[in-house]
Length: 229
Length: 352
Image (cartoon, rainbow over all chains, first blue to last red; front, side, top):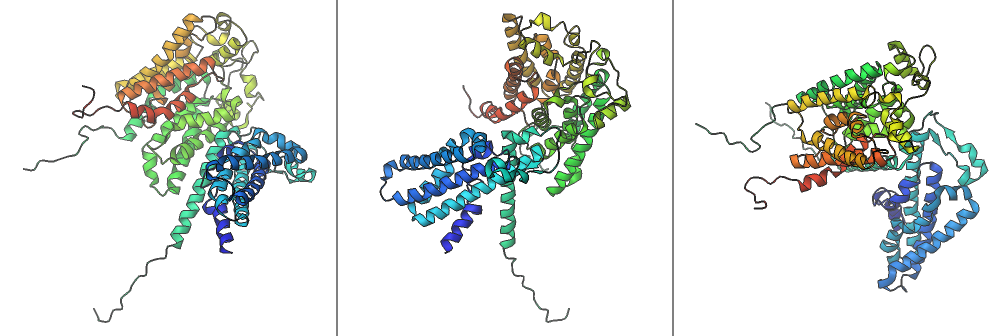
């Protein structure tokens, strides 16, 4: 059981693909202008990651070491194609909004990184759980980044959620404040870099704070005075 | 008798940061006065807003970082940032523009990188670019020079415009920017770019009233005033002549060549020099001691680079003026420039 706990901890915090490994930054920075886009891409990546991790782990005994990378890429590309076709069929609006970044999931280093570093060395159920947790960690950061950028840039949250979740979700849209002129910088890529920098700084600050608290204060020896002054 | 053994450096800059910065903003006064003369009292209000924001932001940042607050207020670097930003933005822009720009410049561009002397980019210009990219309409709505304006703006009207968007008579900025002929006027560089893009020749484009005789009514004098202030700084050895010299040469030479070969579609070298933010950029912005190159040779290269980028963006780019982008792009090159122009210490080899 402790393996699962460790994997959860690694994927969501200690070794988070977006915050610590800084992998897959291209889609991370390019499509997170709104929460909906971020969630859509995050879920797509999550599904691909679980699928590719399971498959890579299952075939790991049969793949020669020399050609493992092309094989992994083929596996990933297969899953990406499946996801792409599914999105095209069921969430067409979001599919159009994400555009080229769905096929580009193939080149997301977070996925090939997990295939190479974890799935190709571990049994399939561990690999699947690792994929789930890494994907969740990635998705959470994506959603957080998308949320911050959407609030700063547009003053809204969940704008266009109906593209991903169906018509009922149109009511999810929250207008926090109205802006006459959107802060375009937050929505453009430079804003993503700046906000990402602050999120990473925040994560490091929390880590330092926890480390400082975990350090036990040194035991202070007080001497009892036995003689009078 | 004891001999004092001191480690190098043996020559010292006699001035403190505060004194250097004080010279810089004193030298900006002629330019500010010229701007006020042509574009109205809005300049002073923007200055006040920028200074107040910079003061508060600097104090808050120092407090959050656990450093002495008075220290930051005393070195006057924030004042220079605030003044540079205030003179770069249109005089009648709404109040939140300058507040947002200054706060971003001080908090994100300066203090996130580690405060005075640590920032990678020129804070004022990074703040300017944030504003220009985010709010292109407000950032290009320069008031037209007073002598061309149909409606003159009083001090109370200026205040009303900046804080509410309308004068007491109900005019908005767009209406105030109309000239006597009822046409909204752009800045000289803006108007020229538009006309050249619309297949007009240079001679046709220059007939608009905004150009006046030399390089745009008002703009030429504002630039000359900044030039005068800059020359004082060079005379006082606050800045070396290498960066402004390099930048003006880097702008003028390609501009002149391009204009000679292409006299109908190019901006004239005179307009390049005396319009937009050329002089302000050359003497006050590119010469920021923190973000520019350090050796004299490096400063030359840096200046030339800034000048050339300004020329390139003004000629082929999407923005009418380019000093802010040029300075930021050149800031990025500074580590490389410094690496390859490091002077060789005496006695440590070299070529011969």
